Length: 80
Image 1 (cartoon, rainbow, N blue to C red):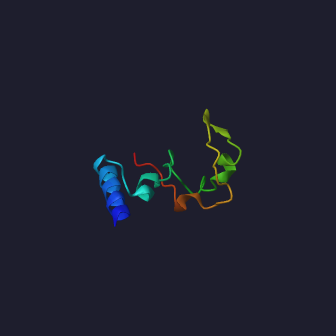
Image 2 (image 1 turned 90 degrees about the horizontal axis):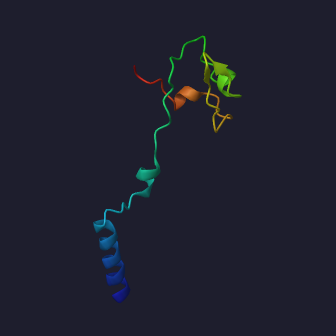
Image 3 (image 1 turned 180 degrees about the horizontal axis):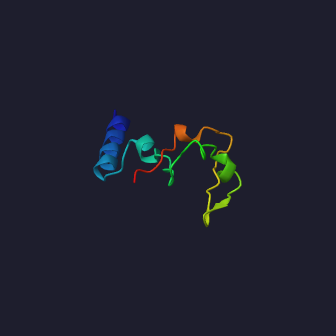
């Protein structure tokens, strides 16, 4: 019984200090937006991004997960 009270007290202090108990939601982040339009002409993302090609003076970001070929499932074009 004493352990339960101690745990309850520590948990209430932890939550009271503003420390979140929902770790998943803090780590969940949206994938970065695509900073350019996606058209039929450039929809093969890895043609530029696989090796970090320079296009119009800007270097394409090399993905951390090149094995995933369908980029627009997660990444969406930024609204302008």
